[in-house]
Amino acid sequence: MPLLGLDSLYASPREGRWNWKHGDLAVAAWYREVGRHLDFDVAHLVEWDLLLLDSLDQVYADVPPDAVALTCLTPVAQLLGSWEWLRTPEGLREWESLLSYARRTWNYQDEPLGCIGCGPAFSRAFLDAYARLDPPELCHDELRLPLAAQSLGFPLVDTGFRRGWDDPVEDRYFAANATPIQHETITDELQRPGGRRAFHPVRHAFRCPAQPMNPSPSGAHHR
Image (tube, rainbow, N blue to C red; front, side, top):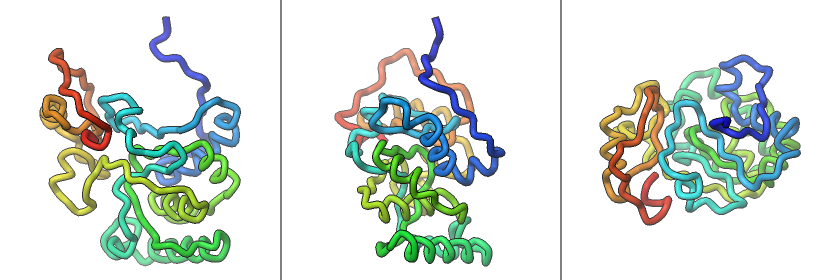
């Protein structure tokens, strides 16, 4: 008996760094070629080093089915000059080009937001619209996705996986850097009522302890 039943298997034809930087475009390509033929309401993008220790229904409990869920949504104005994508002359030029494109082509008029691109969730309706939007390969999906969701009129919801952009305490649980989350941190959270259930990056094998996990009343309390 197979361990995992798959509706399909899609391999992006692009190289690894392109897929890492443009995960949204890879997902859009998947939707055009494969996803639109499948029966689903919401697509969750779960990276290889994202550890979720509860059901998707619980982890994303506060995300409406028509929404786009992104992690640590933060105004771009707070990130200029400090964030990796917005602190070099080249990065700033690409951002200005993307923002100008969105204003000119998508009639974008909102406050720009950035996000951490780990653990997003996309409604089928958004993917259908995004696949037809065909955004340019400028910047990074962590800037493109919020722009596109706002432009297309889809509600944006924070996953809550990381609760503050510059909070070093949050690095213990969920971060975009290469420092792995400690095994002890995960096990401690599992035993804590209302503890977190989403961790990134996790780069070691993890087996849930034999002792049952403490339940949490809703997804909002254990991200």
